[in-house]
Amino acid sequence: MRAFFDSDIWFSFTRSWLTMGSAIVAFICIAGAVAAPWLAPHNPFDLASLQLMDAFKPPSWTMEGDPLYPLGTDDQGRDMLSAIMYGARVSLLVGFSATIFATCLGVSVGLLAGYLGGTVDAVLMRIADIQLTFPSILVALLIDGIVRAAVPREVHDQIALFVVILAIGVSEWPKFARTVRGSTLVERNKEYVLAARVIGLGRFKIMVQHVLPNVLGPVLVIGTLNLALAILAEATLSFLGVGVPPTQPSLGTLIRIGNDFLFSGEWWITIFPGVALIIMVLSVNLLGDWLRDALNPKLR
Image 1 (cartoon, helix red, strand yellow):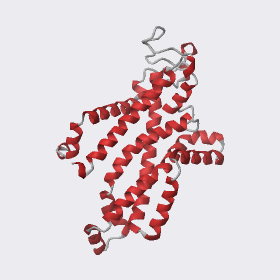
Image 2 (cartoon, rainbow, N blue to C red):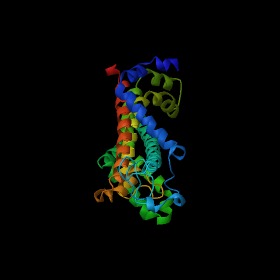
Image 3 (tube, rainbow, N blue to C red):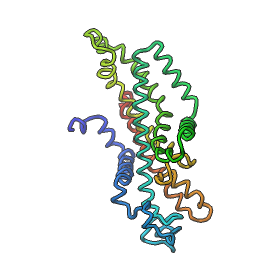
Image 4 (tube, helix red, strand yellow):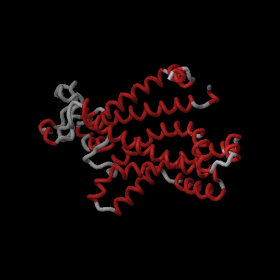
């Protein structure tokens, strides 16, 4: 632990007030989302506690506001602050899960392509190149459409969360694969890899035990930045109505619901979830930018 606090990364972190502020904001967002069942003022998805008479209440600081609902309520009388905290749980769950899935798939493909080379490298990288020609959101929409056509609607509603994670993860893996492949091409010709071959280690052990730990630095940076992109992708899909089901609304779903009332005066129903999404994504992006600079030896 002491070695970490004496490291260049920690020194770089403490020197940047913007990075420290972003880390604090990101921690608050994640902690608030994870602890929503205990910290949220209300349970917005408990139908027994909802009162339609409380619908469309403005924020508490306005003339018609209610102190019980600091950020107002939506069309069903749900507390917006509580809905945002619960919605952030879904957005973060999808973002982290999709990023982990894309990282595992991309690292595996890149490691195989870079170390084995030849036909394996050519085939895997051409698949990645083809996918990179399509926008990620279109790939996610295509996968979601295929699943919707292949399974009954009732089944799709039950697995919708997993479908979104799969769709976003599959659309993002080429970034990891190309980065790991480039690093592996450099590492596979170094002395420690040649020494491992001489003592008779197999290809799989060399890739996993020796090459992989030395190519994970760029992956960490891409993963941090990709987390923000995955959260935005999930919000986009939910805003288009093809994301998570209404019974598990995310920030994108809340923004889509509030958009129907934006021009009728109930601006808080869509503005506050949108602001929460912006703050969350911006803080993660700023951390990713700092991490990219901190791990770049040319900038030390």
